[in-house]
Image (cartoon, rainbow, N blue to C red):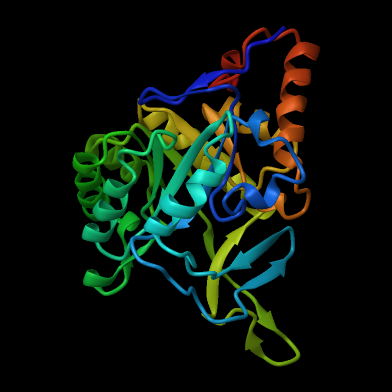
Length: 304
């Protein structure tokens, strides 16, 4: 027998370090026919806002070499709908359920997080600070230390549970943002969110996305994600959750060695809808085959 449990801080211990990433797993229900969700360390439901959002016009997804672009635009029915209609359908799963919280103003973030304070099944939220701050002309909250600190500290005062903060890679120095997030009260950090990218249809000479640019994810971004996780894990004292292009158990191990306490599987859910549960089994097999009794022996064990 091997131990796969990990502690991501803020009173949350996962049965294993395999989570699914927001935006790629819906509300979990969409993937329940393909795998047993109880086997996962946890899953993060799609981006949720205070009020319903229609998202961006189509087309808003485009395949690229070794990845995909998206500009979905946080389409969702709002936090009240989530609480009233979705959470009752998924609360029976024996795994951690996190809600990804987004907003256009600090007040939106705070109000959305407050709504989730007293739900017995939701013990953690993931704060997406890559959203554009409409009061500051559309600049993302997470691109500078001051705005990141401001929104995180405001939510920290309002939200009682575990506060995971999702960091944007579209910055000059991600460690500075990470340190600001830790100082503002984050219990853990997840990274990376998507990289800003673009694709053009050479026949029509038009962008493949309605918004021209969008978020790049998938295996193409993994080396950047591993590098940033390694940098951030050395800069902060709180747990780091790694994501970006995970498709195999070797990818999972890479992130753990770089310093991640847990990982999130994202785009590859579209390729193999049962990939997350497969990775849970493969992780146990890897530990047994390599005579490792506890997965925590791998965390930050990069040899330089």
